[in-house]
Amino acid sequence: MSGQPYAVRVSALAAKVLDVLPEHAADTVWDILAAAAADPWGFGQFDTDDDEGEDVRYAAVGQLSLTYWINRRLRSLTVLNIVWLG
Image (tube, rainbow, N blue to C red; front, side):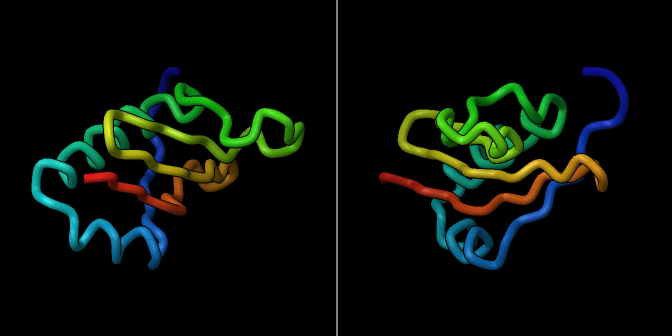
């Protein structure tokens, strides 16, 4: 993908989770988001059975997973949920 990375926004629910994560987990969240901002469709679709939901993506690394929505018009990602199993 070329051009500027997408802007990243965090929902209120995801921000609460991010605030209490251990530092190494929070760093991993930002690493995942940097990759997602550079290539928003690089991670798998959240629900592959939903033909219209291609802009909701799921990124998982180890014990950490993120669900984000791609806003094509505004060129931004919004993190909907963060799950840390640690």
